[in-house]
Length: 249
Length: 184
Image 1 (tube, rainbow over the protein chains, first blue to last red):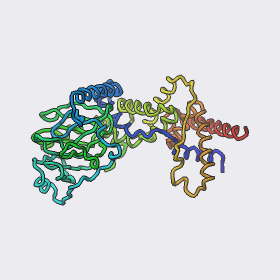
Image 2 (cartoon, chains in turn green, red; image 1 turned 180 degrees about the vertical axis):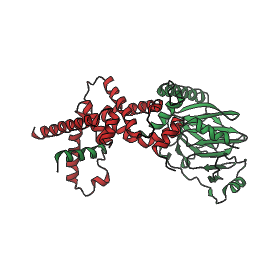
Image 3 (cartoon, helix red, strand yellow; image 1 turned 90 degrees about the vertical axis):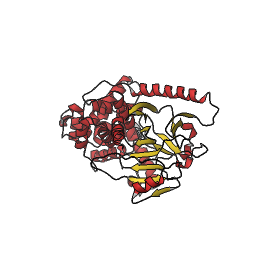
Image 4 (tube, rainbow over the protein chains, first blue to last red; image 1 turned 30 degrees about the vertical axis):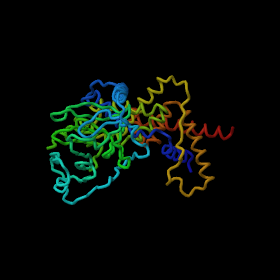
């Protein structure tokens, strides 16, 4: 074999064996950078996401300190949106975390899902107005007090749960790298969670995290309105999540 | 639905950042491979910075031309700057994944063959790491990222003939380094 051809073959092969970083969260960090300071491709000045992340990390630590110190509760709840509480990631058992959706007990699939789901939950299910209209895959979890509905549209998912007064039914685990940005959503304040992948899980009636339901999620827009707590997940950027949020009726 | 790079670039130029992120996800690993070949442990930071710069300069991208070489040119430039700002005093150290070859390459090899192949790759990688920066860049783009010679030329903003001569020089240096090692 031509020695150059042999060497070239070895180089092509070597490229596939390099121990380069995988960069699992790289695109999420780029999206955070763009969101932090870039409005158009023509080039606004941007701020360093690292500085933002550091600020948020410091803020999260302060919030945690303020929230935890005076409390003797076992639960390190930082704040709550509807019936979703935000906790320290330490509350989640590491081995319980999964990047895939776990199937909680009580999950029901139905070929005519919206009406069936509506009959099974204690709150009015809201749907996004999409053009063209699309039918989501609907799952209902009746094991959650009041019921929990997931509308899966493929590229994004909407999770709805009753926002009436009562104990939290979902816990969101964050760490100091998680960025939480208050943002207007319709007529209320929502929260946009970015920075690192964080975890969510259902909470039982005693306030304990159901580790079997824990899963890892990416960016999330969370808000409560009209008696319903909403989560929108699956978008890299806040404007796209807000765009969907605005159409929910 | 799977969108082409052209479609995603078009949407990104209109301000659709999700489309741009989808585009980046498609080229993430090859960008990291090129960044790593040039800047070593600084690769991830370099690629992140390069991707943000790519978005800011999307209006300079020529519609219809391939996106990957354009992106990798920015990655290579950013990785080069990172390496230079580090003072170049330290030799670049590159590593091979512990798990070694992909299964399709490794199949049918005995344990002894696999050990020889691992040692072979390690020596070749050390030789690549020791190349002058410009030679290593052209090797990274052509072989590690799998660009054609024309795309490599576009990425390096130089004539195709220059790429050919640089590759020839780099291959010669690699052959020499490997030969010298065997002799010594």
